[in-house]
Length: 208
Image (cartoon, rainbow, N blue to C red; front, top):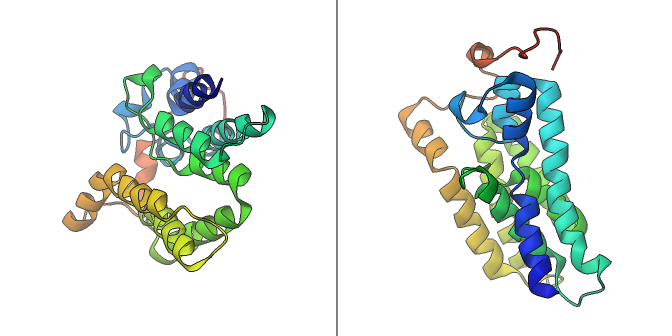
């Protein structure tokens, strides 16, 4: 049962939400447009707010659903482990050639079930960093950093090693953004040129 649920968590995370939305509504592979990442940020950039909201909600739901599995089946296992497997599935989805998103929405869903204090600390930091820097990827990396720091300064949780590796994992996932920042070509969230990447729905009428 345990191993089946762990595998299920990975498979749940592997559902490529942005890819599905892009193909069904717009007839495109979102991995060929914008930043080429099938996540919520690039969905906003390429497909618009409506599609981005759908992607965010479903991706959050993937993490929350996976983290809830041990609670539903009354298993004495930390929900965070199940949620993190969904995060790995989201980033390396078996259903999409292992080319996935960058973890942030699915992590939020995981923490919403596993630990509300961790959710609060990490995503307040996430939005604050984006507000101050206007770079989404810095906010994303700050999620891992804030989780790591919080795990060291509190006695309520014991996930220091996990969050050290998670921070390194986020840095790896955002390595292209870091390279672009160094080269001076990483767009800020308020960059008006991003509108040039927008693609209309394939039926020409749907407002997304």
